[in-house]
Image (cartoon, rainbow, N blue to C red):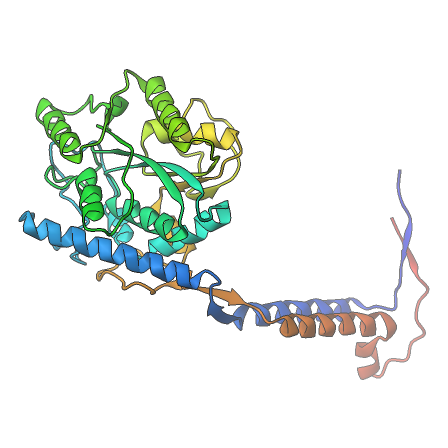
Length: 377
């Protein structure tokens, strides 16, 4: 069935083009000349970044005390958070640029924003999985949650991908314990796993497994030792359920690519970096992230660090560790309402004139009688 309507011949095509050009110019002016102001969460973001900065400094001092050298080619900022590429506890390959990018305390501010958007407030229970692969991200997540006054319930793993917490004497559980003992962090993980294949370091050498067990023993935390993948998932869920008591889980956070937390290789790519609020399609296997998203619990997925950095105005692989308070995450772009109203008024005015008067024809001296409306199908 065809519909018939009428289009006036009085509005010339050049005049319509002129209105469209005006609209594009107005939109461009609003986009190119925005004002910038402090983010509403500025104080909490800055506090979290400063806390992460203190934690970074403490880890660096501990590394010096343990006489673990810093390779300036791998860690040009001398952050102390970039581990050696090879060690008996390395689980798999790692992206050096991502690790260098992660050594920025201002990621804590980005996590304040994500957790706040997820609904985390003072007293909120946040469960999560931390990894040896990204110690700097672990610190930033913990700093954000501590500033927000949340109640974290975490499981950590020892094994790490290349350039993470890969030195056997300074694993992530060692760092976490250090930060708590120095009063920088106020909470610790509830349990620790070996990490690696099947969450039991099955692909590591015997030397590597012994070093991982020694790190677990130093941590003083219970060892989570699942028999297979499904049990690794269920053990985490059960621990979180016991620890939360009567309080609901408000958000879940995953750092890195731990299989029990994220899922198998086919599923990992289906989650997007940052805040996830809906379950991706096509998931093939169970995971802790899937469990919580199926329950409507938001998930903060800390992967593809460079993409998270770009989304929050943070630099990639800085050659110097940024100071707390640096980066676009602390400000927001605002277009003044009066500017929007002005551009809208100009566009509406131009549309009104275009439908009432053929201005271009008047300027050209044409006085032709308007043609009657023509039918349009």
